[in-house]
Length: 183
Image (cartoon, rainbow, N blue to C red; front, side, top):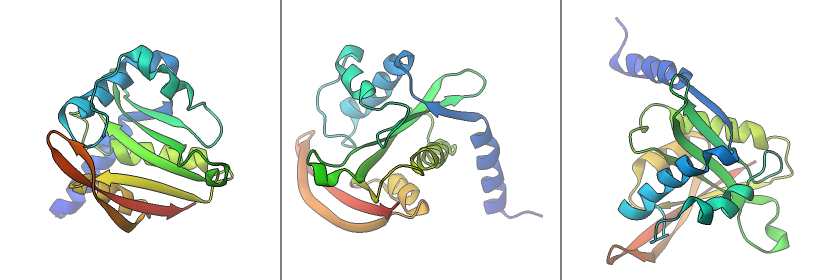
């Protein structure tokens, strides 16, 4: 008889197989904006405090082309084609010497967690970045967020430190833990 863990792992594989990951496209903008705004309005996961319109998010979308080190990968439900989440690699900093470093992030639709969507997104993103001239990836995780920490650790990120009370949202201060991964 298989263990409960083995059954859960098998279920995650089946559910992840129902997810397709592809590069983001301009037609995804409304759905991606809706997902992001969920986190803006109701969580400290992003430090943005005012929701965006799709037009306000367009420059962000256009800054993630289908090639190069700054990518946008989108997960869609294989049956409905509904967008379940996205992952990006973005510039780590504005100065030229940061050019071989990227900051990675994942945002999921509120009902898409625990289905292997984040894993599928990161697998596709890392595969897309494999040929790029990149040295290191970073991820900042507002605390607490155990699910995100586990996802990043599963992909080989290691904890490097915490910025204490670095952001204020919803009337309180939040810490951000930083993780890094060699590429």
